[in-house]
Figure 1 (cartoon, rainbow, N blue to C red):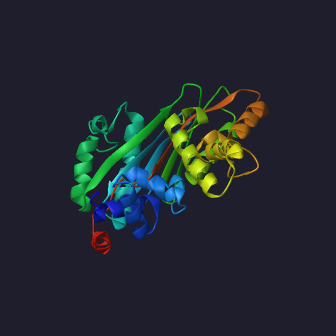
Figure 2: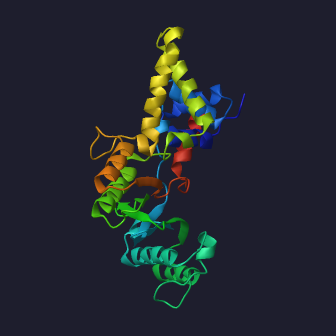
Figure 3: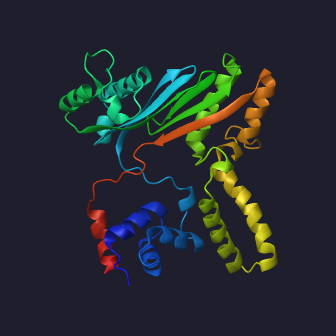
Length: 304
């Protein structure tokens, strides 16, 4: 039997939101395999993992820069929420976003060599300066940059920097205000709806097969006959795509319309093709862990 540790229980609970005892049982049933334990809890109806984006652990903010056919978003982390609300920190994050826009840096390490606006220092030197000035460790974690020769890039920052989004339209009608308006609305949609893919063709086959397996188990446990289970699954798979694929999601501003149809309708309205080509969504701290505290001790007794 696998040795189920407190950290394993805590990690599974963080991913699924299920109770600690349910997490412990799921890990025991799956030999300590975290991914299989997530599926076990979902099959039992004890997890909403497919719709969770993960618990935010790090502090800091997402900042944006750009206009027209260019835009960037960047995540800058700090140790405390208090510093994240500091004007100096926010100005630094905005400067980092502008430095990304002004450079051709492909990643964070290359970005550190780029000039920081208005200081005479590069980004790495300015980061060191800000750490010394503010008195707290800070980090530039990641960024996304979009630039399209013929089109529009829109950004949206939600909740003071907790979520940042870029949306890119390819179109010859970039000067039409209706195009830039919908791009901004879709950036807000992405922030709210958190799609995982642009379209269903991008969803890996193993992800679809995994969902079908979960659907099949649930259908059988509910007493559905085998001869209609496949039809039920076909309908549920389409619903699944409608939840995770941006072009198939219900538009948050008009839920009766799918995003792809809204974009197509705009093309007809402006008499030119409008294509939603890509998006990026950053949520502050996703995938990062807080420093461990008494929570591990809380679950330790349950794993003995």
